[in-house]
Image (tube, rainbow, N blue to C red):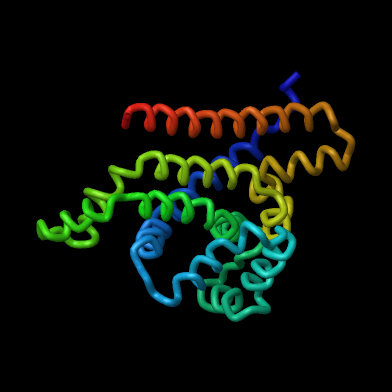
Length: 226
């Protein structure tokens, strides 16, 4: 039954999700730490910006990302003129678009985890001579394992399942931008329901397994703390 099945879209989806999760973790770790510790008047503005992808329709976000990365924008023109590379309808564009789209799914769990820490524990770290960076790595991170796991896994799963933004920015180029969600959409369009069922069932299984693992880990962690 699977002989005529092309699993390349899934490979692309997992590759994209893996790269995006690593990039967002490195970028959002200091951002989440800053948002959890600051009392700046700009904090609500930064939180609004990071949360926008949650409420914006994917078509709206995808349109603006497509415009920003195209040669008609300063960013796209800069990369085209100085690096001779296009940021739309290729894998590089998918990575950038997915990072923007999945940003809040990395930031918000990390920020919530940091905000739940006992302030006295952080103050003790500072008093003992540790810098903010050392406190983040050696004190804060080890004590927010559930939030850390949630942010990483949910970001990965969300990136695997995204559709609207990647379709607008990357299109459907085989072996380049045709990820699993786009492949399912095309199967339904061509009434290839048999393969669409298989792809969709696989995606459903992945999503369920991811969420179940997160909830199970968090439950065991809470029990272990009692």
